[in-house]
Each structure stands twice: as C-alpha cells, then as structure tokens.
Image (cartoon, rainbow, N blue to C red; front, side, top):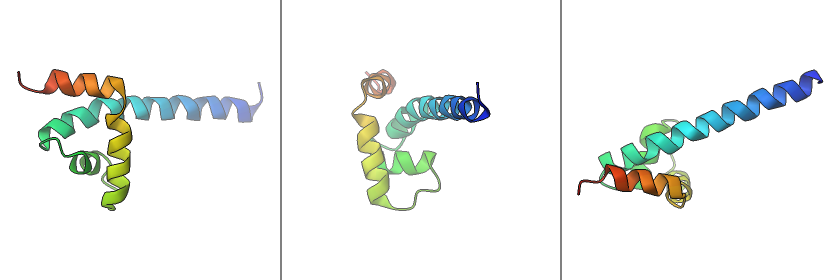
Length: 77
C-alpha cells in the first residue's frame, strides 16, 4: 500500500468520525435551542458565522433519518 493510499484511508476515517459526532451533537443542540437549526449548527460549529451556511447545513442534517430519530427521542413526550 502506498503512503498516499494509507493517508487517504486515515483521513476518510477521521471525516467519518467527525460526521458521526456531528450527527449526535446536532439533535441535542437543536432541542436545546428550541428547534432552531441555525442556532444549533452554529453552537456546534463555532467557526460558522454566516446564517445561510448554518441554515443549509442544518437543513441537510435534518433530512437524515438518524438525526430525526435522535431528535424525536430527545423531545419531551
């Protein structure tokens, strides 16, 4: 295996782990912020200052089934 292939594999695993963490953290922040996706995303990704960027990212996250299931589990009955 070449060094480039090994490095690519490491980077791919790291990105997968970051995405997994985001999928866990976003629902918690979403519920905590009164179901406001922009505020929730900006709370997690503190470097994001543009509301349009945060809104688009939140929308993408909210379309994922695992994120929706986690939000439903966090909402009070």
